[in-house]
Amino acid sequence: MNPSSTHIQKRFPFLASLCLLILVVLNCGIIIDDQNPEYVKINAVYKEFLKLQKQKASEQEWEEFKSKVRQKLSPVIKKLEKTADSKHLALQNMLWATRDYLPLMLDDARLKKSINQFKFETCMAEAKRLLNQK
Image 1: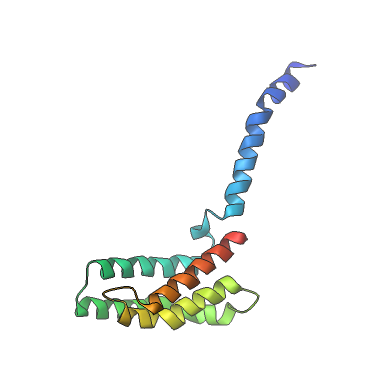
Image 2: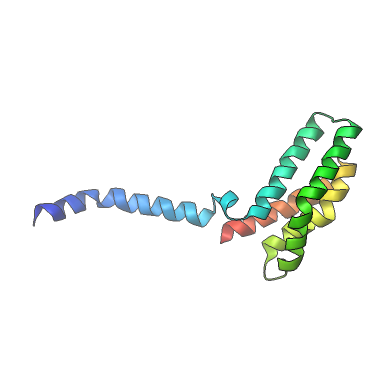
């Protein structure tokens, strides 16, 4: 046996483990943020919503936030309306969350969680799950 093949044999367990780790990370979709810009935008809005909800924001703060959300997510909703369908269920769930539940949630979940917030969270969780399957 030559010295280079011995070196490769010693390194094989490490390289095999590294390859396996890379495959697991890619298959689990841990890097979801880089994969779907619409999901990232919607999730950023939701995080800001949760902050306002937690700090019991004033009526004026909520109205300003609603206006900002409309501006920020209007193009996202338009894009999702064109691309979401039964073959693209992750996009469909994001569309339902932003178009159907978020506007209602901005009014009825200011102080505590509402049914619309629950539905929004459910759709976004399903979208994330589906995106992670790819």
